[in-house]
Length: 150
Length: 150
View 1 (cartoon, rainbow over the protein chains, first blue to last red):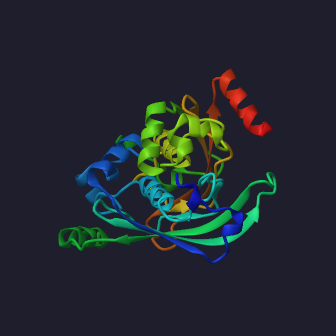
View 2: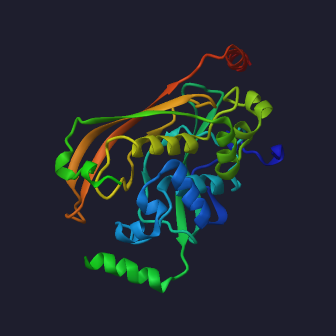
């Protein structure tokens, strides 16, 4: 790690934003992740996925969450000592992420303070959102429409 | 999937609990997961991890979250149509999970209702917690103590 680029508590301020690069959701990795951590038919089998609420194969929400972590680690956020997550106040998966989609993360600092229990450590709170880019796929749109007509 | 064991909205009630089996956090998978999704030194390198806030190698919080999903899928929760997560109201990682630890999940139903936007679908809210079993490791305890003495 490049220690010169690490940020300490005094280097953070509310309102700072850190944007990531893009990462494409790979179909093979999506299946492997689901097989290991979220083995449900709509993540594993194309035909079952078409009949499901999603209308087609989707990545596990935990896979997309993990990908956003990867993207966050690669931003310029870089707190000294690393990104040690104590938790999430709220997390939403507003819609499905499909193989081939590209994710990009934007992180906004909304709170900066020393830790109450460990004053030698700092705590920053961020709002993180992932933008999804999708290449339009006519056959999939048809499948989605079919599902809505049921 | 065994459709006879699937549960519909009327089969759920507040207060029901569903417990999982146990799953051991594998050291090799911990490193592979971190390399792919959370490539920070304290998840990847034993020496760097010893110098970090964790005092030793730990699993990415997203790895342990994904493992709890795996455990949840294997419980008797089994809602018809699958476990489709819309989000988390709160998530905390109260302490590190280390290779060799065993996780077990307990899930308690705290709300059961039809979806407002899609009345043909149901929504249940659960409180989910993971218990960690750890085999005591004297050398690691020493490392943790060293860290606390700094």
